[in-house]
Length: 279
Image 1 (cartoon, rainbow, N blue to C red):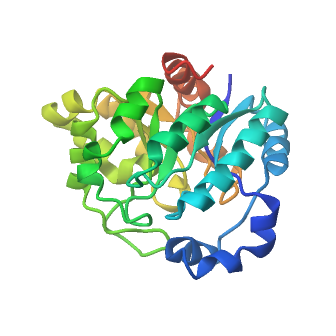
Image 2 (cartoon, rainbow, N blue to C red; image 1 turned 90 degrees about the vertical axis):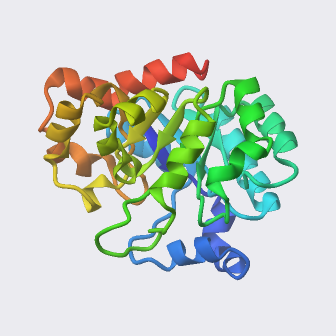
C-alpha cells in the first residue's frame, strides 16, 4: 500500500476568498504570499493520488490561531473523508493552547478524524516545550491520536514558513509526550541526525519523520545517511501536496532499495496507522 502522509486540503470558499483571512492570521498570510504557494481541494487530492498510483493520503486543513477557523476546516476534512473513505484519512487542525481543545478534539474524533496536525509551533504561537501543561496530551492518549508537528532546519536559506523554534524545544515536547506517536515534518528539521546519540535514540523511540518538501532542502544522498543512522523504519513519505506533486520525489527515491522504498512509500505509515487504530 502506498500512502502519502502529508497533504494539505482547503475548502473551496477559503481558496476563493483567502485574503479575507490574512489580516488576523499572519502565518497564513506569509505562506499565501509565497511564490510556491498552491491550494488543493479534497477532489484535487484524490485525483492526484489516483494519477500517482497512491492508495491513501493523510489530509488536514490549515492550523490557524483562531479556533473558529480550525473548526471550519475540520468540518471540511470530516466531510471529505466521508466522501472519500477509501482514499483519505483525516487529521484535525487545532490551536493546541486553546481552552476548548478538549471539546474540539472530541468532536473531530467522533467525526472520524484520526490524528492531530500539522501543528505550527511559531505560526500558532505555541510554547511547544510546555504544551504538556495543556489538555493536548490527555486527549491524544485517550483517543490514541498521532501528532504531526512542523519542524525545520535552523541553518541555510530563508523561505516562507521557516521558523526559529529551537530544536531543543521540539526535543522537550517529545520528552514530555513519549507515549504518543509523533511525526516530525520535513525530516524533523535535521533532528533525525541526532538519533546517532544514544539518549536521543532512546527518547525518540515513538518519533517518525516525513519527507515533506525535502527536495527543497536536502541532496538525495540523505537516504544513504538515513540507512547508516538506522532510522529507515521511521521515515514516512509525505509530499506536502499541493506544494509539490508526488512524482517530483521519484528521482531522489532511486537511492533506495526496493525494500526500503516500500517501507518509506507506505509500509511504515501502515504500521503506524494500524498501531493508532486509524485503519
